[in-house]
Image: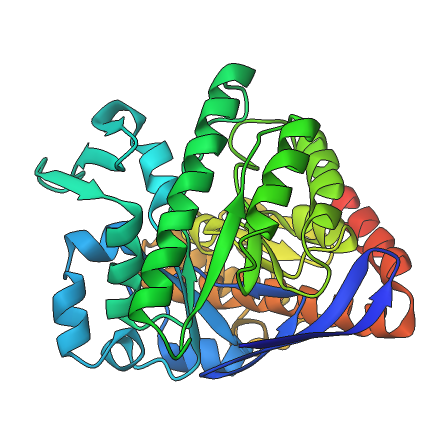
Length: 371
């Protein structure tokens, strides 16, 4: 893996990440393909909208179809017919989300499968080996992600354990990927406690992994608190390595956090809300199921060049959603993902011109005005 920052504009960075399956321009949004599929859309759709890297998830792929089968099928890229890059989450967030079904110890996390209730276990070693079996371009270290409102004492205990877990991930990665064909990223926790973020960032930076991430944001706190926390934490990460903000977020989140120096983002939001009839546009959010769009001949966003906006009217998209046609999921998802990728592409160009703050300000003002 190689990473270079080519332009800076304040704290914002324009860079290029080189991975085994191609280059990734940063800042970049990564569509989420939890179970080796970005919901409702195919790899050729992702190619058409310009996706350079997508996500898979260790926890979900462990449960089905299983990492051994994926490895037997030639790895995740071949299995899902995706020729570009893949990052896999280690399953740490699922440990957080399965709070009622799991037990955490120094060894790792034991939990009940949400599919059949079977007993499952993830340890730092197992999470790393699974991701190597999957053949990810970027592996994430196994961490614990406490809710942001957890007591400070729990955050302290958790981040100490996460540091120990990440050292074990590193040891497994070094032993089982000696050629460094796959990059391992560390994860910094600490909630909204600035001193804990500073302490943990120093500990994780000392591991000297290829990249680093901020975890534990957008897990219960208000957006303003998250933005301020990221603005404080991002500069704590090494300047010469990619910075990834995990599981965030809205278009507003991406703009504000990219201005703070974040390079990579992911979130299920654009595809999830697409399946519920919410479209993002340059004039704000558009609820396509609203009755006022029943005879509207306009595209969802007349400044968007995606297949959905080039081809279909708001009236037709509303009809599909009202009729519960599956095509609605695909067309809405294509548009929302294209919107996110275009937003990052335009921001990269603004950083190159030294106009990142002005561009973000204009977009944030438009989003606030709405349709």
